[in-house]
Figure 1 (spheres, chains in turn yellow, cyan):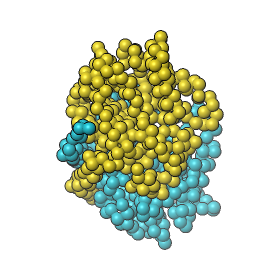
Figure 2 (tube, each protein chain N blue to C red; figure 1 turned 60 degrees about the vertical axis):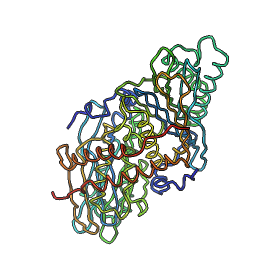
Figure 3 (tube, rainbow over the protein chains, first blue to last red; figure 1 turned 90 degrees about the vertical axis):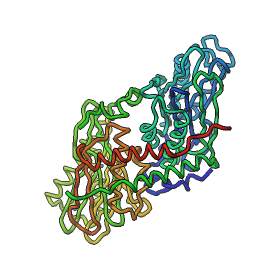
Figure 4 (cartoon, chains in turn red, orange; figure 1 turned 120 degrees about the vertical axis):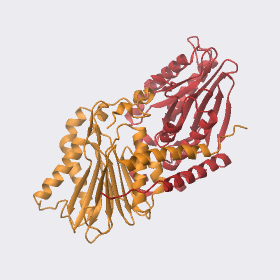
Length: 273
Length: 273
């Protein structure tokens, strides 16, 4: 992986100087995740950069799958404090293994209840770890995207806030982003609609990541992508995009060139008063 | 001006629900400003939206000029708490009128010292108003971009932080943004270099505003733009872009169309493993 110092547009003195890492940021996993619930299927994408300061960059998978083939696939993407997100995932997995009586991620009857479960588990960790962290001015918080399908329901997608409450996607708003979402939002806002084919959605998601990585070094390759076809109830199709991925390289170059050409073709501003 | 509720991509339940206005945000002037110090001149642009909650949207000019024709032009762009930014500007103007002995914005001998003066004045207001505001959990802070030219110096540009310290632009980083900067940063990162002609810089700044306004309703028309030609030592050329501006409309439509076309021309992702 390229060292963050060499990423174009990011090693500039103005911007690194402008955003010194606060104690809060220095232990948080800034990241970028996007999930889309479209007519023909669902798309999930997450980067895997975890940073505790720019000189300490690691790779952690931020996409977790909970499956019962033929019955359910749940995909959980996370952004925020890595200790918190890992604890939530560990407890969700442990309680599913133990077949907890009050319900667990692999037997709750709806995705809505799965989202409740993730929210509750997040509150549990925040309650346990929050006081000690806040003494050190460290944010315990994190966000999740939870999507997938449970047999008997349509595919559903939820955006779970650091407080544990959540909202669900709609056909009007078929996508959610968490983490460092802003740089990559304009292209998604322009392209993605409920009926966008998933292949186009994947292309759009990768362009969105490319824009984000160009403007923020806390988001980096590899990117985990998962495509889930509506009603398949399988594990979906996973793809990991590394720096050697020819398609991502071609998108990176093609999109940059297309933007510069589009920019050059628009007329310059006239300053006549 | 279009009501914020009708702005495309912003009235979606997911995103408005995701970002409830906190007490802090409800009294802050979110905004977007960009300034560029290029080989042939300087470009300044600021929106004029001030919001205290989405149902209370006003227009305030965020670009202030301090001029002595033939000797200096200083341009101050502001983002953040409107009470603070207005107080800073009022004091800078009052002290220039009073010809304050210890120096003022119209007689300090360098732009560096003008940036010090703005930073000091900001600290003065933060000291005066901060305690009362923090009792109500309201941010006193704001950011400034200060640029221009004083006779005997080259044009200079400074980014002044809420703490009153500041950084200066360089030929490597010839631009700064403050406020809601992220949505509009990718196109600037891709296009702007020290030798970019100012006409292209103006076009790029407007596209950057268009992307920002598409993704965030707290930034809105009109946009104030000022073009200053290197060594002119005049008041520059001002242009106010309203919703009726034909050039901005053509950029808005042309850029959206060009992005969709560029997107369509790139190959879709293949999911063969």
